[in-house]
Image 1 (tube, one colour):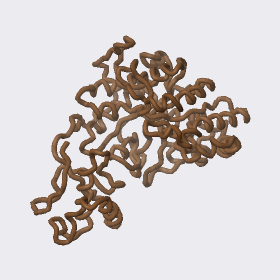
Image 2 (cartoon, helix red, strand yellow):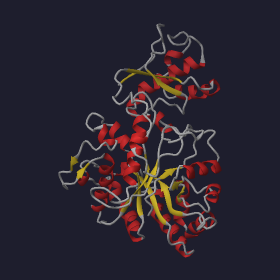
Image 3 (cartoon, one colour):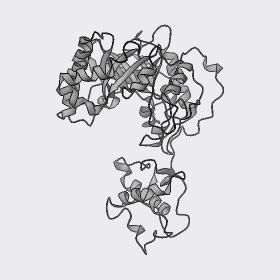
Image 4 (cartoon, helix red, strand yellow):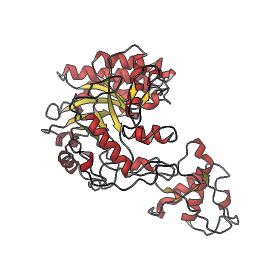
Length: 445
């Protein structure tokens, strides 16, 4: 397995460089591996003759079809792998993306089809003499029920008794690896009072000793990785290795998303690269001296991703291909050789009131449908917008949508609602109502 740093080449953005331009960029910054969310034939053709290793993905929507019929697996391999292999250095086929998760229906058709689909793909590869392409799938950290300390870790009870033993038996039998999305940012930002930022950013100034194993940890990433390894061992598999399918740190986020800034992102990724490209593989305290294939998320900022603002700001490069911050993927550049970074200004959680309003860059033509959708949720969310009510005037789609967004967010934030509305809204610390009689609902954090 390669110790060269990989990147996730996602394409959910407007006006991104073309695949040809993107591959030239990746070659220029010495990307060692690329992970694709699909098996795009144009990209795989363009990678022919390069030394870049590639991980391709079987989309979730194809799993049931492939898992139910070996001929479908054969067809997928014939259409997506054989036209490019071996000239394009495909090294991993990932069957599905986070199909196994904390919310899965263990008796669902897709979940039941996952391991059969993996077996079908592997059998088809072997039948065509393709022996150095490993088959796996991608897991999220939510599959682990207990993460701290790592030695106490177990998988969620429902998947521990169903899909995980079958999945791990396949991985172990084919000498493959388990791919895991590992984001110290999320673990730290969920508990910034009790988890040190220095520990999350590989600062090296803090250590934690696992009372169960006695292992000493100098960073949060190693703790998270070893929690997966300990959970795997509890199911009876002791030699399964891990790969990191996604990791990174966001450069920007919503007001209530602590620590999402360029300084932390650059620091995290630079230190991650130094660790993973060490001439003597460092591994983790539980699995020392092992190469851990690692794919940074992501190559570009992707403005069409939905969800909190951080979702659109994981890129090392802007959408025009220019760097968000300096980075050396080879790990040869010393930290002291980089130019100073902009100071971090949001490493402490925001405390106060927040409102949700229409973002200033939004085309007003996209608001009526969103407004109608939000106001149809119940009779209360938009009640104040009725003619004659306190927030009816001014009669403006921007005003009405801002009220509706803020009202909905305030009411349902505790249930997971976010101030995004498919990119139409943003958080603000300024009360949009001014001094009028209309009172916009707010949230207090």
